[in-house]
Image (tube, rainbow, N blue to C red):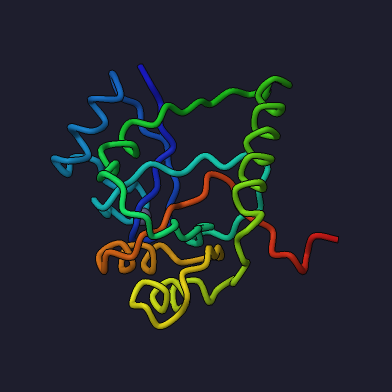
Length: 168
Ligand SMILES: [Zn+2]
């Protein structure tokens, strides 16, 4: 058995779902067999595991990708994320998350924080109204979906980013 933290897109209700395997979850989710125990919504996705964060619900940290055309690597990277209900987080895990945070900070060194202006600025860059400089900021889940539908290349960041103002 495997347990996933799930969330309904309609109400943002979090709940746990038990499955025989990660594949079972995918099958049931695709078939619309999972519903939210609170509101009955069948629009269900896995809740993102974000350690040690007070990230606002429904907001993701995002970064614009350099507009270098690569092969389409979108694939199925978001499918079947392993999740854990570990009670105690081992120190190695925290160290790795620390390294991930360092790597992310390095990646964002040249990038400009634009906060909630991200969707607007990412579009301006995409449509050539602004120079293509790397930016990062926040976007709502809806914004992320819309930007992706418009073909604006963005990448959800694994860890939330503190706005520069609040870093002291
Ligand atoms: Zn719900």
